[in-house]
Every structure is written in structure tokens, then in C-alpha cells.
Length: 185
Length: 321
Image 1 (cartoon, helix red, strand yellow):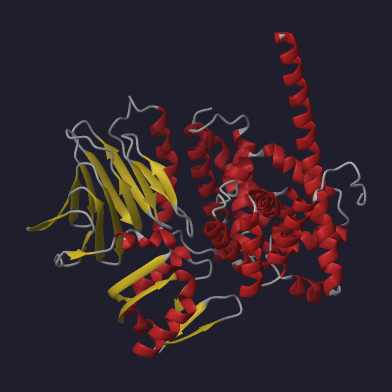
Image 2 (cartoon, rainbow over the protein chains, first blue to last red; image 1 turned 90 degrees about the vertical axis):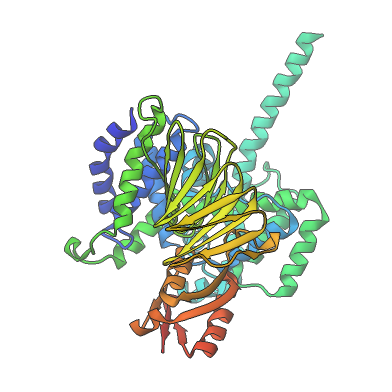
């Protein structure tokens, strides 16, 4: 679908959807919808996108999440350290990149959905809000060590779920390489 | 549910990386922790890779359906009660709408060869865009340019903010940047333009750049800078390390109106700076600092210019006299 046509067709729908989901703001759903379209138009030049509507919606909701997020000092410190020790910056993290990486996104969502309600709440307060464990503990009435342990287990679980899939993918790859090797003998 | 890890690989390095990740996100950490963390990272490439992976997942958790539900519920609870209360759209959003529509142009270049294309970055974002002639422009936070490519000229209008240009060489098509009543002409070179209120600062890293304003003009070469407001300033030399410092969120202001300084900083800050007393907006200040050191800068500026500041519960900084 051409961009202008998509814009014309999807704009009212997206706007209504965002109002329904996030209310009237702030941030203003119309501003977010505009930004989402711009980001979409930038992404679409790099690679074709199968389901533009779903993709634009995902960008929009990621922009909402960004707008909501508190200024996160720890994250800035970590970015600075990455720079200092020569780790590549986390370019994978932006509303549009995360919308593009559907597979990884799906894995993480599936893993989170299998956590307990308590762990879910804790991990979102930490990751989305950027709240300190102390803050979370005080707010939700848990002990600091309880918060720390629960979040640790949740992260371990999510990462192990992702790695499981990665390892399986590697195994498949190894086998196919071996088969090819045999064929060539 | 939990507790079924037996089949999943979780070696020591992965676990250590995750422990560091948690430590770094659990609370603000002191210098000793940061030092120890850096030592651990520097110890091996495997450590760095494992940490990057853990940090990546931590941040990806934010862009999930569960995070969406969490944010939607919270925002809705804080939402304004009626649509009627929403304020009028600022002009740049209209511009953003145009940008969205004009992006279409890029798919049919043969048809609209001389149409303007808008590029913009949002608040807090620094990004690089590639123009159709191969030139690259890095936009500072909340900055906008429009570009028109014609057969004999490449014309850019810098609408707002900072932009660093890497211009690809093309003798037959000069590259011109227009800002208000100023014109900057180049062939192939690297230069930076910062716009702060009525003041435009041009700095050159490579090649030759000509700046014109009314009847005046100057030529700048490598490591030179000039400031243009009502008239053109003297050309000054700079160190290469001072070039396009805004990329590292380092700013220097020279006799700028405080309202212009605040406008620039607010494009980079999550939480804005606001004025309690409008009279302060006209004050002119000179200061040089990193954005991370904003608090110290405010202390210093406060002292020399007799300005008070405080941060409210939402993190908004208020200036008063």
C-alpha cells in the first residue's frame, strides 16, 4: 500500500485506537500517532513491512511507553560505561527497532506471561518505571531482599527462555552444516 | 512456571552478567561499584558480550504487550478529563504532518525531483539521515531541516536546532544551507550549525564554507567558528575536540538570552526547565557545560546572575529571580 493511502486510511483508526487505549494524555495521542507515521515512513525505506497497520500501532504504543518513562539515571550511567569500555551502544533499543524485531519481542512477551503476577508487577516497575528496588519495596510493601530475589528469578527465567530458542536454532544450523559437509564428501 | 531451568544453559558468565545488570538497575550506584563493574567488563570480551545481552533484554521488556497494559492503565488514570481541555497544536506538529506526507516523495524521485523533503528528530533524540545526493546530516534533539534537490543546486533550510553536515562533493551542484536571513554555501565539506534563538553558530571541521548575510560575507576553513546574529562576528579558531560538541551533550552559550538557552536544553532534557518569572527570559548568560552537570551549571549561573532554581516532585526545574 502506498504511504499516502495508508496514512489516509489508517490515521483515523489509529487515533481512535490510541484514545481508547491511553486516554487523552498527556502525551497527546495525536502527537504520538504523527510520530509513529514518520517513524514508519523512515523504516519502510530500509525493508518492506508485511503488516503496516500493526507495525505502526506497535511503534505508537512504544512511543507512549517512552513518553511515560521516568528519566532514568542508572540507564544513563550504564550507557556511559558502555562508551568507556567500548561496548557497542544498544541501537536495538528504540520504538521502531523493537517493533521490527518481532521474534525477540514475542519470546520476551511469552516468557513474561509465564511469570507470577507479583514478578510481573515487580519487573515492569523496575524495567519500565526505572524505579529503584528500595522504592518498589516501599511502594508495594515487600522486603528489599524479596524484591531483589523475585526480580532475579524473573530475569533468569526470561533469559533462559530466550537462550533455549537460540540454542535450538544453533543445533539445527549445526546439523544442516554437517549434512552439507557429508554431501560434499 | 518458575523453577524449570534444568535444560537451559546458564553458565557462570551469563549469571554474573545478570547479577551486574541487576546491581546497576537496583538503585543509584556509587563510584566504587562503577569501578568494579568496569573492571569486570574489561576483564574479557565474553563478559562484555554477556552484559550487553542482559542489558538488551532488560530494556526490551519495556516494549512488550505487558508494558503497554501497565503504561496504559497508569496514563489513563492520570489523563485529563475532557478532550476540550487539550491545548492547541504547536506549529511544528503541523510540520511533522507535512513530513509524514512528504516522505512519499522518496519513493517516486523521478516524478517529484525538486520537492522538499522534511527530516526531523524528536525530543532527546540525536539521529543521522542520508540525503539523496549521498550527504549525511546528523540532527540534534528536536531539530528539523527541509531539503530540496535540484539539477544545479542542493538547498537545505535549517528550521530549528543543531545539524552537523557531511556534504558529498559535487562541483556542479553547490550545497546551500539557509537559516533565516543567512546563507551558508559549501562544495564538499564537514561543518556544524547551531541555532540558538536569533543567533547562528557555524563551525567548520573540513573544507571551505562561505557564510553570507545581507552585504557581509566570510570564508571559513578547518577548525574555525563564527557567530551570526544581527551582524557577523570575528572568525575564531577552535580545537578539533570542540567541534559539534552537542553530540556529546556539551553546550556552550555566549551572551544568549536565557529563554533561548532553556529552549535548546529542553530539546535534550526528559524533564523541562521552566520560568517562574518571565522577566528572567530576557537575561543574557554565558556558560559552558555538559548536560550531566546541569545542576552544577544552574548553581554557578544562579550565583553569577542571581537566579534561583529548584526541582519539583515531577523533576521539572523552575527558575526564579
